[in-house]
Length: 94
Image (cartoon, rainbow, N blue to C red):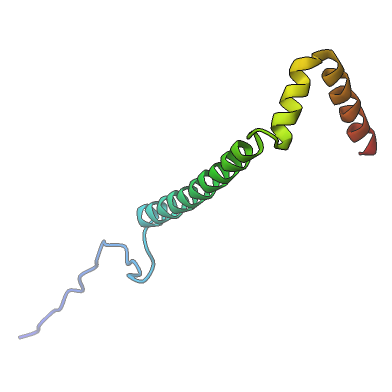
């Protein structure tokens, strides 16, 4: 008796198990972006808190911002003129 062996062909596409699929890579990228955005947001929040506390400290009576605010209330046009001249001086330096 003669035995015939029929070769079976697989229709599956071989995939390498070591490389992630497109969906897994997209999820990993989204996770990395989310972490980065979270870190940036945390850094900005800390910077805003420091700036707010510095401004509050400078607005206390006798401090620079309190003095500038008082002068501006007394002579608003003169203060506007000084601010304009300061802006022109800064713009011409660049």
